[in-house]
Image (cartoon, rainbow, N blue to C red; front, top):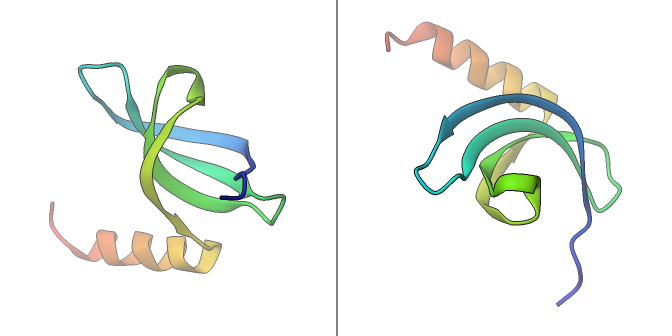
Length: 73
């Protein structure tokens, strides 16, 4: 399996923290030296391990923002 390279371009915020020190975060991440995308996933302390997550383009992030603004939470 090929190595996955990533660079956290900008840390945007922590959404939650688990009891074991992992955090669910939204960040701008460049995967395999590509253009940065919005990324939501869990990370261990130091960001050396990660859980499954989702990535969104800027257009998808805007659409998600608009959809969330329409619902009552």
